[in-house]
Length: 375
Image (cartoon, rainbow, N blue to C red; front, side, top):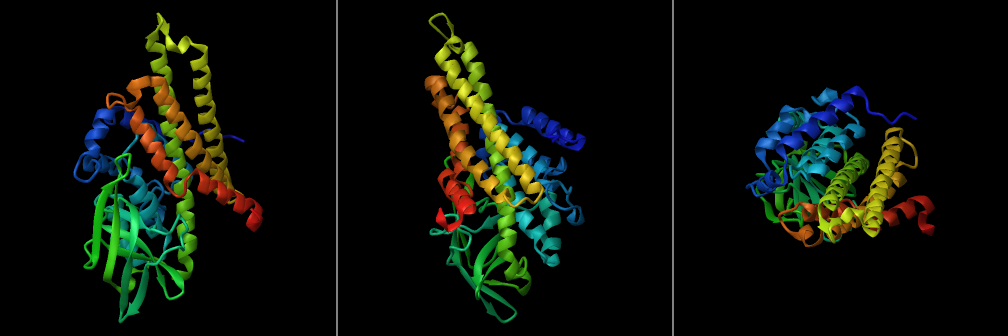
C-alpha cells in the first residue's frame, strides 16, 4: 500500500511547516498565549488567509473538502510547534458539527464567518459526571412556544470564552439534541480558566436561556451519530498533534545530548543515554504506525476503525507522556526551566492525553469494542 502524500498534501505540509518555522518560536508562542484571547488573533487571521480553516469542511459549504489525512497533517505540524490557536475547538469540533448537520440556516449564519476567521466556535458536551460518556449529562431543553428553553451547565469547554457560537448538547424529551447557542444570549454565564498547558477553557451555565426554533443543528435522532463521528475524527487529529509534539521532544533531546558535555565528552556518547533515546524513537514510531492504521481504517470505513482510534489515542497518551518525561530527565534541570520549551511540551502532551478520554479510558473502550460486555 502506498502511504506517500499526494502533491496537494505535500504542499499543505510544506506551507504549514514553513509558517511555523518563521512565526512560531517558543518566545512567540508564549506571547500569543498571554494575549487577552489566549491566542493570537493575527495568527488566526493568517490561518484563514492561508486557507487552513477551510481544510476539513466540504466544498459545498465553502471548504476545501479535505480528508482526515489532511487535517492530521495540519495538527501534526501544530503539535510540533505547540500551537495555542483554537483550531480544535472552532474548526474540528464547532464548524464540523455545523457542517455535518442539516440546518442550512445555521450553516449560512456561521460557517462563512468561521472560515474567514471572523467567528469563533466551541463545543460544550462535558459535564461534571460525564467521564467522556456523551449521554451522561443533565442539561435539558424544553419546547416553549416557537422555540426552546435551555438549562444546565458544561465543563472544560475548549475555546469557550472566545467563542461567538457554542454547540451545546442537552436532552430534549427523550433524545440527545444539539443546539447552536449565540454567546451573547441572556441566561448564559461563562467562567474562564486555563488548562495546565495554558489553553483557555471555560465552564458554562445556562439559566432559562431562550433559543429560537431554528437553533437545532440537526434532528435530535441524528445528533448522537453526528457527534460521535466528529469526535472520532477530532481524536485522530489530536493524536497526530501529540505525535508532532513527541517528534519535537525527540529531536530537541538528541541535539542537546550532542552538545551538552560531561566528563569531557557529549552525553550522547554514553551508551545508557543512547538506549533511552532509542526508546523515545521507538515509541514515536510506534505511535506513527498506529496513526497510519487509524487513518486508513477510518478513511475506508472499516468496522474496526473505532478500535484503531481507541488504540491510537491510548498509546499516544501513554507513550507521549513517557517520551516527554524522558526528555525532561535527559535535559536535567534545564528541562523544567522556561529557558527551554521541553516543559511546555510535557504539559501539552498531558492535556492531549486527557482529551476525549485518557489512555486508561481508551484502553477500556478498546476492550469493550473488541470483546463486548465480557470485557
